[in-house]
Length: 259
Image (cartoon, rainbow, N blue to C red; front, side, top):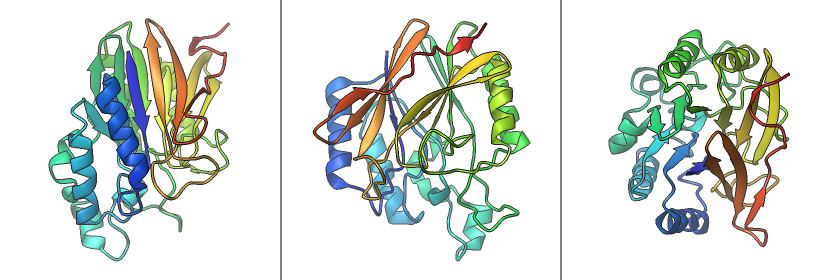
């Protein structure tokens, strides 16, 4: 099985060459699903959602979308931010936070954005008790022997890249997801790819971050992740629009029980 994990496309500041390259690879390689971990748009404007939604629908493979901080209308549009933040997704709205059950793999959505927070920077992550409980319920309902991949926008803890998410309740959520048997947690936000192993409650979880297909690159070229699944094992490859188009970033530590 092959999954494409893409993030932070930022329509409105997208890289036209990068999004065309990604769409071409999807058409040629036909991944089993595309996992989009947020920031489809730059400023949550209608024309950005329209362009991003058309791009995703044209891929013609199963897609699930997580909401990023850039996908919620900004402070100058408070009514839309608080009352109808997802309306501008249009036809792509049905893809938002949709779990996917594939043969041997369950994709579980985890909301990490907030319409308001008790801190100045609302772009940072937050896991609410309600969002965490929904993810835990979906994990409990997943087929028993499936690999469990949880997908959200913000990394739950910092350390996989130079950028930060400072996700409130992130470490507690990570421990709860590990205790529930999650094998990997997929995210975006920091615009650089990573794959690290973290152990909580005697269980090793892989934290996997995708790069960006926008012009807002940081420490790496435009990129997305290819996740290859073979039975109960999986590996992460970074696909880059550069002279080094594909390389492994998986650690040798396997997800699952330790000791």
